[in-house]
Length: 114
Image (cartoon, rainbow, N blue to C red; front, side, top):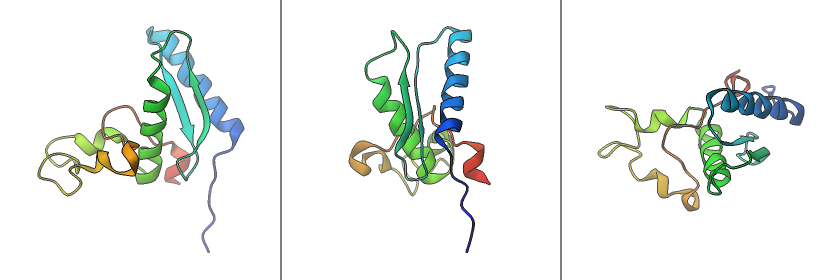
């Protein structure tokens, strides 16, 4: 049996706080979501003034990165991104009731790769 490393709420909150600090440094209003291994939010925050669509997009990106254990931009990086036209996962963004996000912004945490 393999041991599973699970992200704890305290760690997820720390990750979100770091993302918010970075967003403030670069002057970008963001929504940040950290999910568990099943793609369900542990922490989801929208900065004051950030787009109202941001939380759902952030959750979708985090869901995709967690579910596939890869950053979302890799799905559409030419020439071999699996979600590009002609490749094996083209159209995957329509799966999971539209929750699959195949564009830049979602990344896996290092704890997911251990």
